[in-house]
Image 1 (cartoon, rainbow, N blue to C red):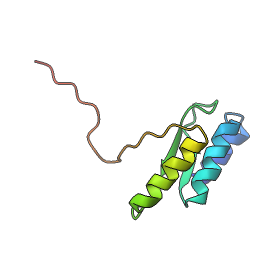
Image 2 (tube, helix red, strand yellow; image 1 turned 30 degrees about the horizontal axis):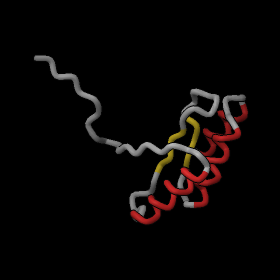
Image 3 (cartoon, rainbow, N blue to C red; image 1 turned 180 degrees about the horizontal axis):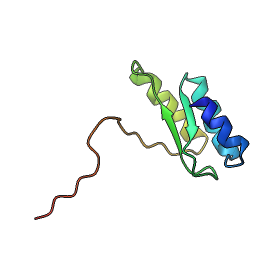
Length: 85
C-alpha cells in the first residue's frame, strides 16, 4: 500500500493533506494510501488485526486534530443490500 501511495503521488494525484494523513497514520504503525481518485479526497487506512481500542481512539483524535474526518468500516462484511417488496 505504501509503494502504491507513493506511485500515485508521483503521477500527480496526491495532495498535501493526504501526506499529512499518511504521516499521522504511520506514527501509529498504520499503513495508508490515497484511494486513487486524486486531489486528496479519500484515503484508505489498513489497521492491524491486533489494534487496541485505545490506539484506535488516539489515531482518530490525532486525525481530528488535523481536521480529518474518519469513517470506520469492516472488510469481509455484508455491504449495502436492496430488498424489494
